[in-house]
Image (cartoon, rainbow, N blue to C red):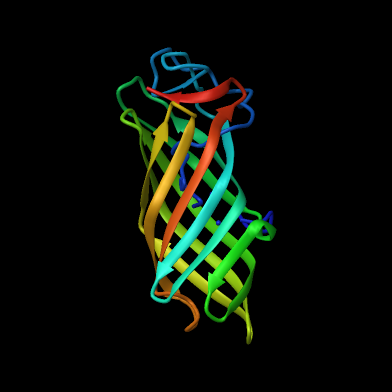
Length: 210
């Protein structure tokens, strides 16, 4: 799931894991009914492999040492359905992309005066029938404006876990820890990634998890 468009869980990543919208590949053949991901309703029409899914939402990064936060109200999630087996099971998504609009971000962190950009790199995501969304791996790069000029903070995690809900067709990540792998003293050593995207949808409508 990037930030020049802007791009910062993902995500979902969130979340192919559950956020989605776009067009279905012209060559993709619809899967059989009763699959993990369906359009329109639980137990509806199967989402075909190759379908492009997307959703809009928001993200936040919070830390305790030093205390601080970055909140971005405008973000998007996209992914391509790579597999969608019969339920119960686990669907997979590739080309997971999270874009963050840096102009929608506010920051509260000692020494920082603004957010120049946030890029979130995600690779793959899975969505299980029980609603568990897993994204692997995740790398978030934030370029912050500070009293002394631009500061780059790079955070990574092998995976993050979220949930998919059929109530509002959302995918949500809450306080998933990311570790600082490169950055300056202004950057917190650990930041917690939260994001929510909804409704996850594709060319066939809203996406449900079965």
